[in-house]
Amino acid sequence: IKPQEIVLDPFVGGGQMLRTAKDLGRKAIGIEIKEKYAEIAARRMEQEVILFEYVSKSNEESQGDLLEEVSQREKAIR
Image 1 (cartoon, rainbow, N blue to C red):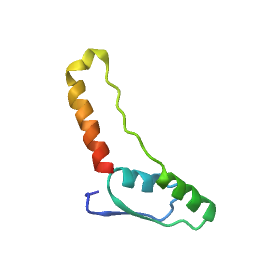
Image 2: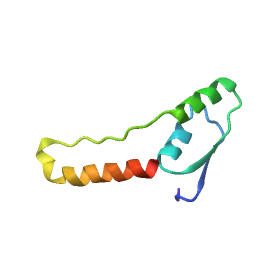
Image 3: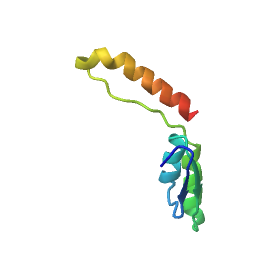
Image 4: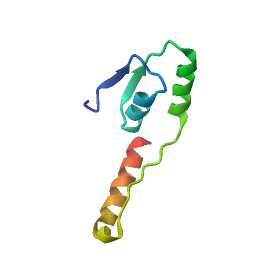
């Protein structure tokens, strides 16, 4: 999927596909016939997502680069 493309999810369910699209900075359209699941998906879309990655002690050299990358991803989401 290219960044400018729109994600279409015709069976939203709990909204995982829409949430993932939002986290990746994509626009998305979701369709759900059951009100219960549409409400679950709407709540999921309102949630804040915190990105994190594991850095081992043996890999301290790349820790600064990794933290910079995570920071850039967080900025892109907002």
